[in-house]
Image (cartoon, rainbow over all chains, first blue to last red; front, side):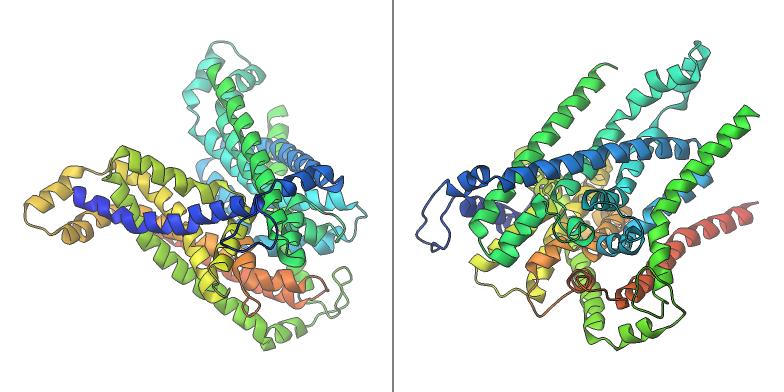
Length: 260
Length: 266
């Protein structure tokens, strides 16, 4: 049976080349001077210093985090009741509802975002709200599906037991259903917050050009400006902020999980 | 009475959310038949944007590249992913943990970080960006999903079956293709489906790994959106219709088959 373990060798070579190397290159670029050769590195922290000393960049990072946070909250507020109501439906109807939610997800994200352009033109929202509509639209299905999965796994007997023991509907929901569905909400948060922070085509398509998020900064520095060292440093800062927020979310999950 | 009212209200809430999902899609479909260029004023019925779309060489090429890349990336990533998953299930714990950890990186990373990683890699190696680089990148970000969908099924497999095949004189290759892989069929298919969707849907990674000569549907949409271009409405409509048809067939056919089976049993 040990012979089969050799089957991993090609993939180990593959991830070394296509996963580990690219990540190391981002690190290398972030900590080196612009325009140096491959052999002679000049290490520097200037890229990071530039990020924090410039007034615009921390503001853009803050704005991206804020809009991703608001998007996540709205997705929970709209998505939770929807997932809950779907989970109450009879099985066939439930399958159909889930199919209806997954269907638009098969259509390219770019096209789905673009499709809002016409409708949003009727309203005179500011760029931030336009972008947020686009984000909620794109990421809400993830939230609903995650919460629905958690809710449909829930043991019905627990709810019957709570009712038998004299809890009313509200109490049953708050003390039984909600705590048990938190893992679904947490994985939903991961699937909404992460792409929302780093998104760059939603603001570009719906924000009307002047609305810039951290993803747009990265795109700019790689595609238009061509300062890859600085672009790498920004990506690294963004990745760190995301890892940190994911860590905090996971911690919260454990805390609520511990109360059960 | 209260109960009925509540049911009605909760039902309509779900439909309201559905309307939110489908409204923009129908809106684009409607305006793909618009006579004028406007995205807000419907001035009359016309098929000119469809005609323009079918005449456009760049759209045809974009569709071709999207499909061909998705197909090749699915086949290659499914093969590598399946073999790797089988290998991992038979490897030591340390190796398995390390590989699975690294395997998680592309799934946890924001797309844009993965994308610039590829861009830096290809540039440092002096590889000209184009079809090959997009394809490599797609295969690369599809494999983790294939592995992830096969690993749980592998854990349920009975090791003795493969062991017995080997004892009875099967070569390792025979044991692999005649015993192990047939048992994994379902999870391999679902892994392949996820890979296909990921590749077909991707914009960010394709955008950063493609050269100026090549674009897929998403890149085409992104680059032509700066000015109003109703051919995109027509293209979107066609994609929506195709995707919906395929999904309905995939979902409804098994239902009908099941119903027939039950009918026979009765």
